[in-house]
Length: 640
Image (cartoon, rainbow, N blue to C red; front, side):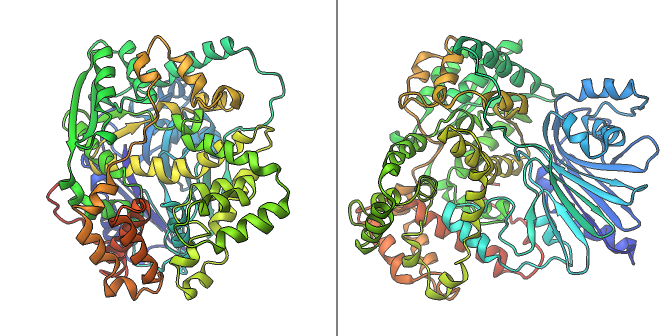
């Protein structure tokens, strides 16, 4: 697990020493991703760098690594779990290896298969390969987006890339102009979805894609996608499905236990993480080290269930109680995310990562199970709303939507009328929005509203959903979340917060072989009679305690609602209503005052909206107000 960075200039470096200094800065600013080692290559017009968190082949895995004749060189972030099998296959084809590192297998796979090398990789990855013979750069990102990869092509023709935006900002040609569409997308969903970023002309390489730069021209291509398509043959019986699902789950966990350092697991007490820990316990001779986070507020505390699982699997269990005092780390989170990011569960994710790092260097998590097996309660809500789709269009669009707009803010039924007045897909998009199309006219100034009228993010979401040809309506929603919320929110949160603690996180549920099987399971076996994750719960019966299988769904959240009214009340009010914030021209202060007032008086829970605005303003203060180009260096935090 590492962080990578680099650039390819249109012409040869005029000053190799200056190029090396720039690359060094790009690497050092992400030293938290790889505190064990730094490696760089500067040659001709290319610069490749990396920071290493040593996990496999601790002595021999120094990067960059080159292939047979030294012409193909790689920097790599991630883990390839089938690297031993791949190495044997490549050796049979005449390739000679100098290390036992999984990184080297990618180099030789590229030499053998070219761009199709990604088809042979099982794992999580973001890497850059410079091919000196072809004079081209090849960068790729794993199938579901577990590892991040940003890039931009400057007006001068330089392609700059990195694991985090802060690396790109270290390059003197980087221009950090705010992308209005990215900003609008953030205010809608609480994150900036791929391939958008908060900066204009800066992109995330989408999951399952690779980019080739040759002769100054960049070509982005997709090599894999979630296969939510009609089945050519009827699905097998439920029992046959369960048998294969159990086999694939076990294999996905077992292959992720490869490491030359201690490993453990995050344990929330939910079905997903408990299943992962249970399967880990089958394949390890020592007790699994497990790590959990709790809260003093009972309604958010999951430690009861985590302790049930820990006792059942006889783990070496560790806990941390999150108190409102850790609100002080919000500034630290802003620095690590680089973009505005409103998922408040980043706080407990960071704290559990710091806890785990005291004992291990690698953890397994249950991430991806909700998107794969329809685990979110919002899927059932959407199905209920979808029942209104049979109403005539003139009733929904001509009556319900105008009525919702006429009702005053906060009126009972206003949001409900608006959502069911939309079509099925738009209803879901409104349901998952922090600031919906109904409320944005109240929040945005007229000028800002005009700038965001293109609605690029919503068009992107609709395009994703339209690609699913399955007759099962739920599949379009699962696919949409897998392409947007999963990489944009969940995996971004886990990557940044685990890497902030120099900890590697692995997600067995996101094994692509498991995904390719589960996406073909009928949706009625995922969301069955209102029960989420039906088929997964059946698959792990007898492994996971019944008390956990029968428990109600809880998100990995924290009591922001209470904290905003107590510990954070004064700071949030001062931040959102400051002259600096209001001068940005985005928001109508009257509406922000309504949100603050209603939340403080307990009339409505506006914690998501207020947190979203709060994190945006903190991001502006750190990344816009404090400098025009390079990333502000990580300060010394009390909780760092």
